[in-house]
Image (cartoon, rainbow, N blue to C red):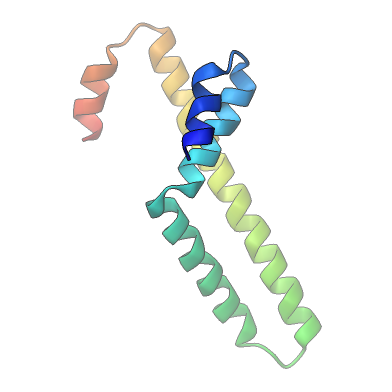
Length: 100
């Protein structure tokens, strides 16, 4: 984690910085536990219909892809909203109080 923090501090490329922040977020304890739980839930749900193992594997794959796309969309939407709020000059401290 210290290596990623060092890269983050020295990065001048916004896309790389966003990637590193996403990586740090994904590796933190709460999202990591959420991802493990989601994968377990997806696997359990799709393996219940194990009459056709190929169909079950396909279901697990597509469920995982949809989970990933949904999570990506949610974080992207939150990022776009936050960028908009910052660009119009809103006070982020007030926003933090509302969210908290």
